[in-house]
Length: 187
Image 1 (cartoon, rainbow, N blue to C red):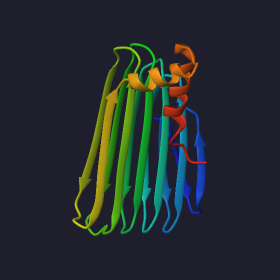
Image 2 (cartoon, rainbow, N blue to C red; image 1 turned 90 degrees about the vertical axis):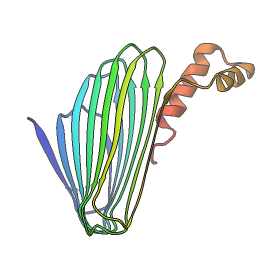
Image 3 (cartoon, one colour; image 1 turned 120 degrees about the horizontal axis):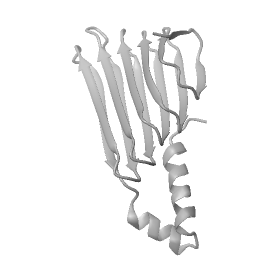
């Protein structure tokens, strides 16, 4: 298995657009990592492991424009107190393809005051198969943990509103797609 290892010892922002198979990222004490990842119309089978130390933080923004099968597994390991993880995923499925996403957050005992957030939204433009598993494995009581998942279609009222302002159906969908996929990205 091809594996890329990254050690973060300064605050860093990464912009990813690749289909590397496996990655291990280590975030040192008191450091922040921001990842904006865009996966556009590529077949993908990827595993990411992020290890957080004391008061370290990761913000992981992922946007997927899917017309091929995609499989993601993201593991966040809260190894020390005060670590924070925020995983935000947006996936737009164009064709009858499969998205299989597993988000795992692990909090070790004595990793007090850790904060975990997983927020995933999937829009199906066709009758596609979407599997998402938001998992949190927590061995510490003093944590703030939340996750949310929604799978659906664009709101018909939003489509109607934009078309009433002079946009045709194609322009409306393109605007909604762009806002959905990139509206959460960090500048």
